[in-house]
Length: 321
Image 1 (spheres, rainbow, N blue to C red):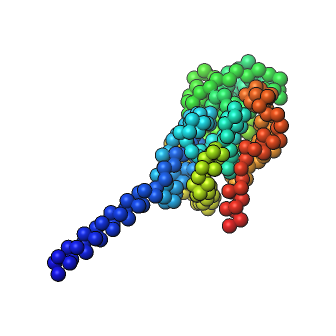
Image 2 (cartoon, rainbow, N blue to C red):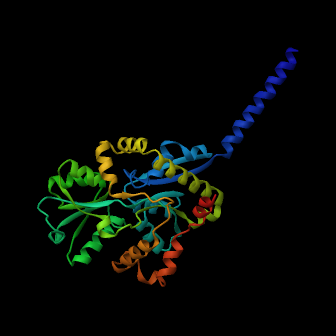
Image 3 (tube, helix red, strand yellow):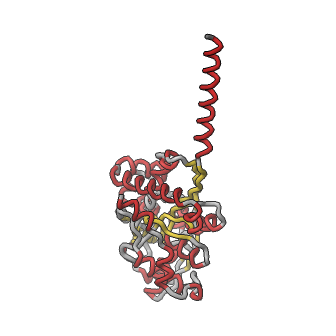
């Protein structure tokens, strides 16, 4: 009897070990990129990360944080990031460089603001002034270009870390800055300056952040792409249904007061379902071509280029279900 029990114990132990090995073997590695302090623009990514939703789908996730979308695009181009969330402008620029970057879904609309010191009374006062931006290739930098063109003024761009912008403004090293929420609201709360324009003023309902990947990634592993978009939708819906907890999470992640987060959220829109505002993507692409950030020779047909960057098929299939 003892020998039989011992044999059964050994068999059960082997089965458990095999089962554990199979579960581990089935775990797929997933490298996901997101922007620093971007929780208000990409709340679904925040929820996925905090609630370990992708891990629950069987993925072993490496989360990579970037200072701006241009850096995220560099790592995606080199194959070091599989999926990510960032501004649509860096994605457009990278697509214009011949990389097969594609947008899978939208995140937020609008959500950026220009904060200036009190001596700046009107937009034209920014002529010849230093304005902080997240850097070339960001949607905010493109908006400063658009503002300058529209008002026939010259604005000096100063690339810097978004979290440093309020301090640089307070020290007088810049005359204003443009950044994504909640950094503008933080600067106003600290009384370093005031909000002169929001991105709503510059381009109403414009697409801001998006969920991105590469066509080669989708073709190589369509099932993973489908699971990522499905989890993204689930997280987005959770955010909309659980605002109080989401705001608390945003405050904790950014180190800002909940009141500041709430004030910042007034400038951000969260359309659901998260379709991409393609007319605004087209306008942004035109602006990037005009400023030379996308080479005109690489975009022989604007409509075809814009259509090619958006791949909504997975999103639409999941929404039907």
